[in-house]
Length: 235
Image (cartoon, rainbow, N blue to C red; front, side):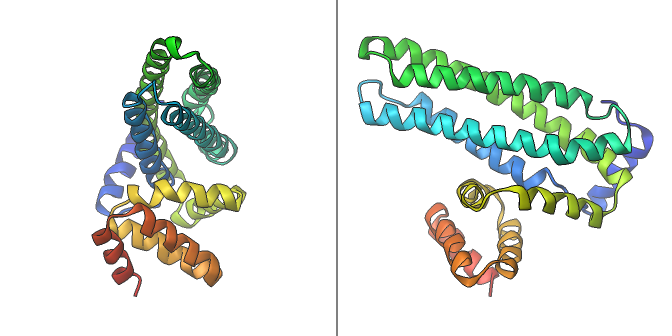
């Protein structure tokens, strides 16, 4: 997708006056989740049955998270891009199809590792590790295109209120249990002001009991100093 002069101007303007960025937080969470899962997979002791099983389960959970994210962008963001300019989502939509295929292959590999005989585990795990590394690398480049070319068009074509409405559409489509699980990656991936802003908004829209659960996730995923800063910022 090429960026025209109007979109270059939109990107420059967004640097001076920040705009609503639907990609920012979810992509921070994805980068953290992918990187942590990949590094953890590289540390697995194939002689430890529990450690191996947990690592494979975590890969499966990551892949489901990625698959859900693809659906949200396909269903909400891509139609907005196509409405702004026909064909503008074509490249990324094609990459999403490739990612779906990669996710299916990685699922099969993770299942193979989990059920391998002890002697076959090192080779199977090595294959999964390298396949996941390529998937992560591909996604890092993919997200960069979305955050630049796609955002440029979105900012040129839509106001912040319209972008917030699209983002809210995505949020409302996520089941509560999936949302709570995703917070384990969102909360620690954000910087302190972003974290406080997100949780401040959630506090306004959630019952007290549900928000207490969110704070519990924050406490369990943040360093003590970061959680103390969050509590202070939420006062």
